[in-house]
Length: 89
Image (cartoon, rainbow, N blue to C red; front, side, top):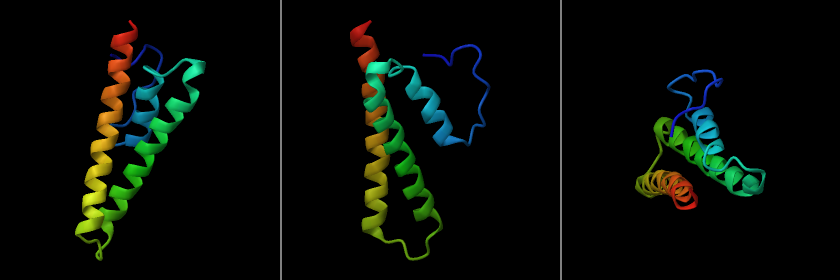
């Protein structure tokens, strides 16, 4: 899957914006509004959690574990969204 023509090149470090653009592809139809929004929200929440964890001196093992599992969840959701396109195409 490629970024469609006409979409401006995003900064490599802009994770949240990349997630927005990437989830607009497999879940772009109007009927996918709730699914698309959920995927974007989960990715943004995960990113904020990981950022907090990176800069918090009091972060502990349970918080780290939750962050790692959140990352796994986001990757799994994105893979499932791409598989959904394959199954429907």
